[in-house]
Image (cartoon, rainbow, N blue to C red; front, side, top):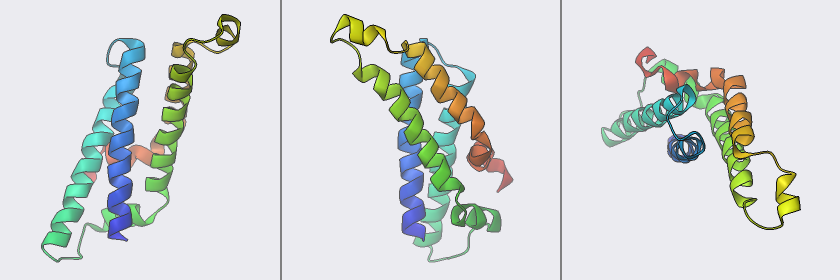
Length: 136
């Protein structure tokens, strides 16, 4: 369980960072959502550090709320959401260039960024645990 949780947390932090970088590139500045995604990177790292300390000290005891969250579907939903956001943003990047008429049919970068942010907002409850690390 811990190995799987650790991998998921690493993936959440990695994808979050890539999404932040892409959003900042599109907007040219940090937004509320990019700050939240930065906080998710930090939260994932904090949870991972807690798990690593427990393994290092050979203690299988972690905060009950943390253990419950790690056993729930929320970490997987978080990662799936971030992956979907990244695909939305990357789809627009990969469409750059090519045939003018074909490229003009696709939404501009800001539309894809807005779509990714909308997805994040719709599922932000799943990220609550990572955004409020002080609860555990």
